[in-house]
Length: 130
Image (cartoon, rainbow, N blue to C red; front, top):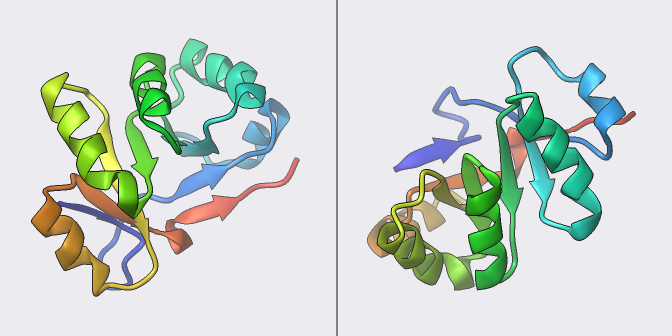
């Protein structure tokens, strides 16, 4: 299981940007975090064209499929969607990892028992302004 943002474990941070210009305020070789929204498609396209890694937070099964097709390295889903998302990812052999946003380390065990690829604590996401 992959764990991002746990206080015991060193891990990658993700940078949440509001627009393409905000990329200038992120460290080199950083990964970008975006909620999947139609308004973000221009940012996603820019990231893809420039080979900048990104992860997408989604809310539906259809958005899971879109996120994988768009090249997201990880797909962040709710706890409620986690088992279904992981089954879809395994069935279609996604390159993307399925992550669940959690708030408490007690949730790690629950996600491990469901077979989810990883968990993400909110402190692993750094908000960047333009």
